[in-house]
Every structure is written in C-alpha cells, then in structure tokens.
Length: 88
Image 1 (cartoon, helix red, strand yellow):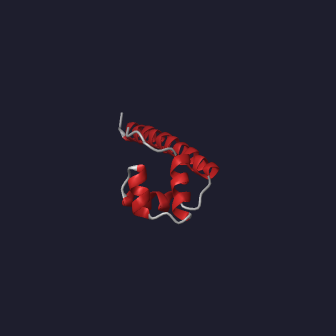
Image 2 (tube, one colour; image 1 turned 45 degrees about the horizontal axis):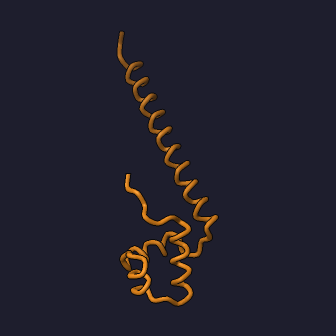
Image 3 (spheres, one colour; image 1 turned 180 degrees about the vertical axis):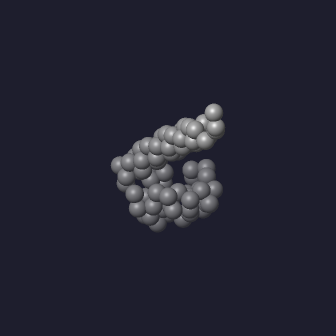
C-alpha cells in the first residue's frame, strides 16, 4: 500500500495558505509537491476542517470494510446457489 507523505492536517494547512493568498506555484515548491497535487487536494479537502477530514477518512475505512464483507457474503451465496442447483 502506498504511504502518504502528508497527513490530512498538513494538507488542510497547505490549503489554508492557498486560501490566504499564496500562489500555487510557490506553495508547490515550498512543500515539494506538484501544482496538480495541490489542485487534487483542493478538490478533495477544500473547505474542510481537520475534524471533517478525519471523519471522512474514518467513513472511507468503514466503507472499505463493508464492501469486503458484502463481497464475501455474495461469494458464499453464489456457492450455495450453485451447490443447491446440482441434481443429486
């Protein structure tokens, strides 16, 4: 799994600098990221507080777990249907 270099708190701090009037190119150089990364962060975290970002992360993790559980249940159900459809 890819390790992130920046936490949500750091990303939001960078976006606050941008909202305060810093230029995108200057911020990108200062923090060692591309301008495209800043725009991606802005689309994902724009207008959020740190607590909102943490809640978003928790919800995404919960969603991932639920999707895995659903996939396992669907596999079990498909296996049972196939087993029951055979003639003995």
